[in-house]
Length: 409
Image (cartoon, rainbow, N blue to C red; front, top):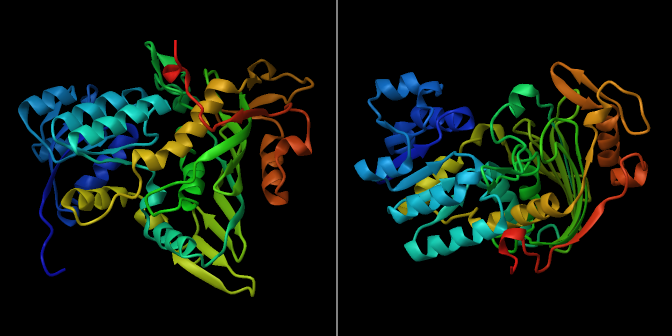
C-alpha cells in the first residue's frame, strides 16, 4: 500500500455477548484496521468480557450513546445492541455525524428500517448492516461471477442450519420476544442466529453488488418448543429473483448441522459450507464436473469491520445497506406477524400425535425434527410434502406488504 490509511475514530455500543466478540476483534486489530476507539457504550459495562482490556487502554465507557456524544465524537458507530434499539441508536449516531455499522437485522420491522433510510439520507450518512457473509471476499467474488452471467439464471436455492440452543441462550431479556416494554423485537431464529443464511440467498440473487432480490410470496411453517413468544424453528419456501428459495432452520435439535447451502443455476451448482475448509467453503460445480473455488469463510468472520472502515474513508462502496437487508427483514417480519406458530411446549416428555419434546444437554428437542429437515434438504422437498405431522404452511403475499406498524389506522 503506497499510502497508509488514515485512522478512523469509532464508538462501540454493546460490549457484552456478541458485541464483546466484535469489541475483542477491534482491540486485536487496532493497528491493522487503523481505528481509534473513542469510547464504548453499555449500561452493563462491568459484565463485559473486554472490560479489563478496555480499562487498560484507558478507553472511556458510557451508559448511553447520548452521554458519549455529549463528551466526544466518532466517525463510525458500531452498534451491537438489541434489535428493539436499532432504529433509535442508529438515528442518534447519524444525528451526531457518525456513519453506522449495525448488527443484523437492520431493525425489528420494515417500517423502522424505512425510517432509518430516511434518516440516513437526511444526515448524509451510510448505515451498513452486519450480515458478515456479505462482506467476505469469497462471497463477493462469487457474486461478481453471478452478476456477469457466468452461471446463467438462478433456479432453486436451499439453506439448512440446525443449531441447538440451551436455556442460557433464551435467558436474555429480549430473546425470543415478540415485544418488550411496548416495543417490537420480533427476535427469532430467522431474525437473529440464522438470519444470515436467508439473507445470503437474497444477496447473491441481487441485481447489483449492493442489492438483494426482493421476496414476492412465501409459504411458512413455524414452530416453538422453548418458552418464547416467537419461534425456534422455521420452514420457508419463497419466490424471489426468478428462483424458489427454501430455508430450513431450527434450534430444537439435539446436534449441530453447520450451515450448508446450495444454489442451482442454469450452468452451475453453487455450494456454500459455513465451516468448510479454504478449498471447499464456497464452490461452483460446472456441468463438466470442474470446480471453481472461491476461498475460505472462517478467516474473514469480522471483515465487515475493516470493510466498513474503508467505506467511511471513501475507499470502498457499501455492499450491505438497509435497502440490501430489507429482503430478509420483510420476509421474516411478515412471517412473524402473519403465520401461526405450532406450539409444542405442552408435549415436553409426553407421547402424542404431535412430536414428543425432550431435553438433551439442556436443549429442548422436537423428536424426529432434525432427521426430517435433513431429509428435506437432501431430497429437495419441503418438510410438509414429506409428512403432515406439523400441518400445512401459511401462504403470505409480500408484494406491497405493510407491517402492522405502517398500516393506516
